[in-house]
Amino acid sequence: MRRAAIVGAGAVLALAAMAVSSAEAAAEAEAAEAEGAADATGADGSPMPDFLGKGLWRVFTSLDPRTRLDVHDVGGGDRRVLWPPHWRVCTQHPAPGGRRRARGRVVVGVVKKGEVCPARVTAARR
Image (cartoon, rainbow, N blue to C red; front, top):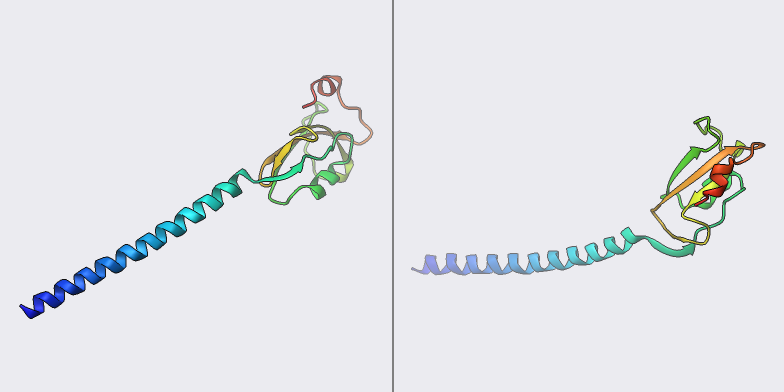
C-alpha cells in the first residue's frame, strides 16, 4: 500500500512538472510566433528610394541584403544582367516613396547604359 502511494505521488509530481514545462513552452512559442509575425511583415518604416534612371549597382548597394531583387531586361532583347554597373533602371516596383519590407521583393526593369528606355515601359512605369 505504501508503495502504491509513493508511485501515485510520483506520477502526480511528474504530471505537474510536465504541465508547468508545457505551459512555459507554450508561452515561449507564443512569444516567438508574435515576434515572427512582426518580422514577417518586415515593415522597416523607410520609404522606397527612387532608382529610376540610376545605375543598377546603386540598387544592389542600397537595399537590405535580405531583400529579394528581381532584375529584368526591358529593352526587348531578354538579355541576362551579368555586370550590374553597365545597366540602368527604367522601372521599379514598389514605386518610389512607397512602403517597403525588409525581406520583401523589389522588381526592377533595366536597359544597358546608353540605351533609351522603351516608350511602352516609360508610359507604364510602376
